[in-house]
Image (cartoon, rainbow, N blue to C red; front, side, top):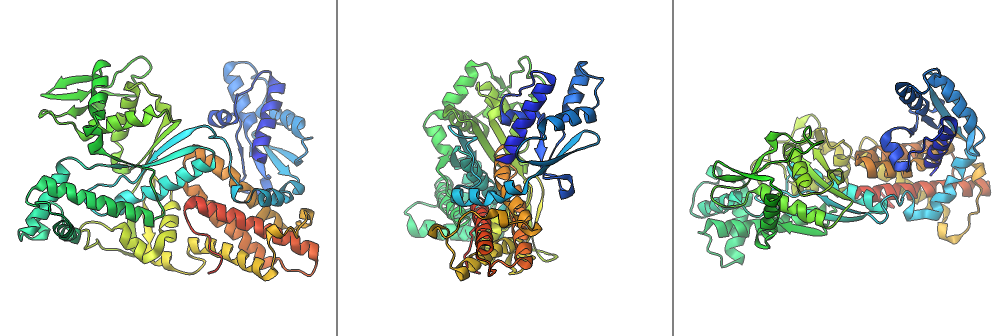
Length: 559
């Protein structure tokens, strides 16, 4: 990947100019922020840009080792040492110390061959080779249908897992089934009360799904529904199957479903609590047992006293938090390199407690990452969609899937940063026009497929020989540059987890293709140029397909 090569060349040149300055690994370089190579927003500023001169001079000035040299002067020296690299057309130094890289056209032109050769593997990398990641997501409230309070995490988690796999990780997708507790009994009691003729709207759990549960329990089981605990347990068992089916309809399949009840019955929760007791991380207060984070040296600023939480209630029962402790201990026993939890924003207070627990259990908190996502509001144009009658209080995933389909649901969810609220426009999601971003992207893929069918041009026929030097106009070069960005996005997202960047990229790539198609004749009479352009759009199709696959969205051949 060209960006990686530029980064390494910069690091080597800086080291030669200022002595030992090696950062270690490319990933570490990015994390330290020392060697930052980015794509400028304005093409007039080059194909890549770096502010490394600013970073080096600022750092060394603070250390008192080279205060006499300005960042612009250092940038000029650095540019002079890089100017003969074979991929560079020219370099520009700009105040207050930026270096802009202009890359030779032949580098972009050769990108076609790279894409066609890699095909479905184009954009992948091996930064996670030999590493394991566990990604927990959705993990819905067990007492109702799957709604968007939980489901927004589905496309986020599934796409992140796909990106990590594309980056070489072995990934476990997991779902936590919270099937014990007072809420389960309350659901069971609501079902019993409805069976006894009480009004549905007067119950703890409302909505037509409660009647559905009553019908299924009565029809398919000899269970005595007058026992609220048994009725609740049977109900959450039925609801879990429905939730997993809804997830499957969103394109999500889990490798593991972990029941909270199993953590208790297997002794995992007791074992985890006993371990914390030996570590002196528990104390008795108000008749209950509390988790008390240790404030060892270096950690005092991280974990404060308000992280204390009950793990064993005064009646002797384990709390949800105690079972969550056992679950995370179980996760880390597998020795993963990443443990990722994807929660709704209402769980923000739970995150510091989990970090404190992981530290107390003796695991590396740097390997634990949490993504919090905000809520979704549904609209049709400017009108806010009313609450669902079936659920009583929320819009279900099934209703949205029935209205807009899987592709639009996933794409519209993934268009937004997890930490922002979403106004999901159901009307726009159904439109078959360029205004609908998922349609716009899919239409680019289908349009390319149509051109290739018309030309009877197939990659496997071997009827194309490298003639990429013929791709010289701005529309062709812009499309090539967009294609080359895909591996960079994949690499960055595997580190930042910002999966929304994939949808942004998909739209930008589709836009570059549509502009190319509207201004460039692909099926020209000149055979070599025709084949070069067919190869270019084939490379574009591959890149679009790989992007959509990571997003869990289909890449249609016809529309």
